[in-house]
Image (cartoon, rainbow over all chains, first blue to last red; front, side, top):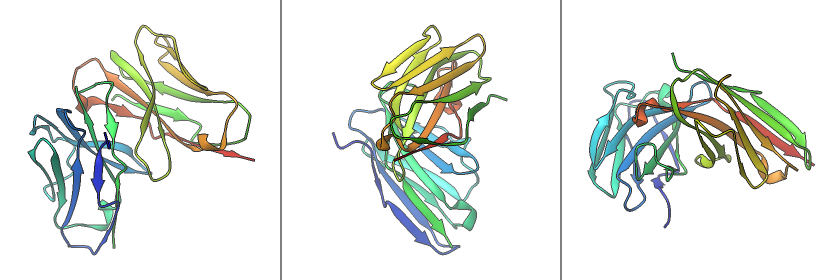
Length: 114
Length: 114
């Protein structure tokens, strides 16, 4: 298995632009998680899905952030409009259970908003 | 508020030496505690997972210990190698059965030098 695949690896965009981050979970994993990592706050859970349905989005910072999972093999995290404070590394992870031992992170997308 | 604190924030050691990283937590009750290794530019990778009843668990040169009474865990690295240079993150999973309550420490950045 290729693991959790995220794209792009790096994204540089101007303030106000729309940004879309993509994630392909491990096949067969029913849970998908989006995280944000910064030096100051570490890893923070933004939202997670179970069987393509959003379960908890309480970590989404504000309405500028939205996430979708149209099918079991694809998810997007969108920021519109982007702001410099959104600069961070965004990770996607998937698991066969919500707290499962197969919990696997992708390599992340480093977002820089200038 | 549930918290996970790690120390030291950063550490530099010579190749071949041992080191110990600390994790103190207030999450209670908890399901399990995990240590992750995060290489630069990569996602976190699980090293060890310990349940409430386990005191120690090893993974090669990595040994994690857990004292549930004092709410402390440590990760001991034996005979360090250059490839051990990474951030090490302690994660505590509360006994609530929901992924949204995972609590991450901000990590210890380890550098192994010649």
